[in-house]
Image (cartoon, rainbow, N blue to C red; front, side, top):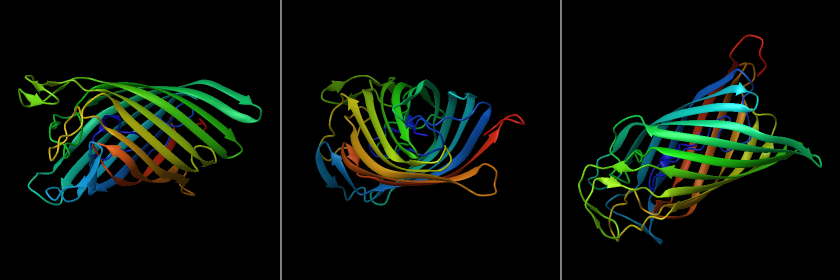
Length: 304
């Protein structure tokens, strides 16, 4: 699952799971898939605006997380997906105190709009609607160590997928609206002084492309490219801490794979590696993830 509310300048962003909001794979009707995924992300250098630098007062930023996820097939072409994560962030130098705790609940409704064979290519069009909300009262105004943005969000994604034999390509685009965040101070500075404890969050565009090989939904390997850009915001000031409404951008690339464990009747292992290629007000992070998921029919006799 993608941790949607984790559009954090300096925090890990999860993007691994079974059937997710960024692929064209579906759980069969009355089938349930659930599991746990561990993530580890770190960076030493970051972009302060467009300036690429390090910071001796931070050292290396390190984040680890454990995400619980579940996906249920209401029908063969309509799924509901939910996820939540525990996150721990820290730095190796300076005096900033690390943060940890349960982050946000993410819920997606995923519907196949079209499935058609076009000149030998299995083609599908998918729509995904999502919402998220904080599960705990964690501190948001403490980047880079905050575990989340503490903003309620709503998103819509459109996705196209084509497959020929075992080879496939997927492309999608999403728009996210983010709600106002209340912080624990009555004034702050962006490009001007604002006397309020409310922070208006810029909306977000997200793009995702995948290319790879798959055999059903339980066995695949794919190359992934992610792009994220806030619509507005402002750059970090020189030697200042990041802020919630900064202009945050990244371009990432990586590899995902999933493989069923023989003889387990539904248990699969997954692994992922992502690296940030470019960014703005963002850490140049390398993220590694691994997890296990189990898929089972909800009622006896149903097919997986």
